[in-house]
Image (cartoon, rainbow over all chains, first blue to last red; front, top):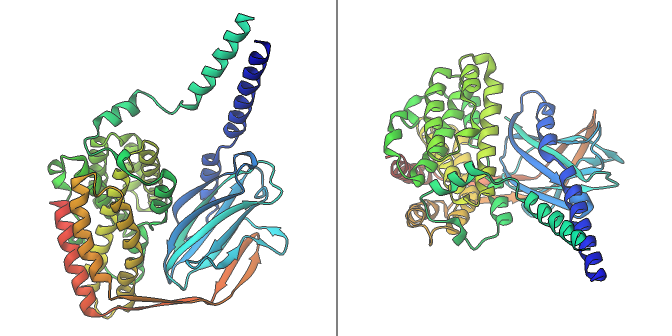
Length: 143
Length: 302
């Protein structure tokens, strides 16, 4: 009986700790904070939640059809001033990388992509030394 | 010892209950009010569905393109707002919510704020009919709509609201309505750009943009296919959309890949990409696409 109770207690504790880790991440808060960071002239169109679930997920991916002749701006937000190790990588429809926010050892806050080729693009977020594995991003466009 | 066991059980049960804190009576009422076939019959996972829904571009992009290309505002391209009372199924409501959403974006981009108010009212009525009116604070939106200086805020709020509605419908496992909302919005945007293009046949950029819709239509057809067997209305719509898809078949989109370069300025990376795409589309293709799009739109709005 003691073993059963101990086991049950441990399971309950793990469950609660797991819920706590997930509850700490509020991506909506970060996406909301990110909208004003879109550069002038860009129209907001999408927000992307970045919830690494405390490190359980190492990559989060979204996709969007980018159109030729349009500029896109993706801004990343996390706790504090920086990106908390969140890296944005952009891939074209053939999964070839067209850009990254991590350049010259710097975790940049966003990328601008003037699109010359219409197609589905893949937007991935990964973590490098991240503390919270939690953030948000927004996509804007302009002609 | 028994008390300890009961306490553990209590904590365990509470933890599980807390996971479902999103449910409430209003949401249940919303679920009960739906009269289309259940989306549970979809065989696709929610993650895959959401990922396809996410990739469809905003119709706002087409409105901005039209304005930037110098074409004038034309209210005749838009759906009339006095048809609301005839949209009495959730199928029609969701489709026309998408249609009016595109029309609202068009009026916003052209700063036609008086017209925008009519579309806001129509959107409010349809949203209420689908029990998703809580996403619109119409007092704020109308205040913004009465002043053209507030255009950015108005666009932002209405875009955020439509994003929230889509997320909510997906969370409620009623993604079929999200798919309809998106399809209605896309058809309306395609209709507007086809009409403008036919009045401005020399504008090659508009023609190319029509051809590029082939990529988006493929995603929309995939989304519709998840529900076309289980929902007769969606099945009917899918057949019509398939006719449209057949008219895009001859259009060729070619992509050429080239390495990109990056430039960092003040924490923002600007990508210079030499990849290009070209499109092969004839005037005849545009005419056929415009005619079929108009037919499907008639089916949606009438």
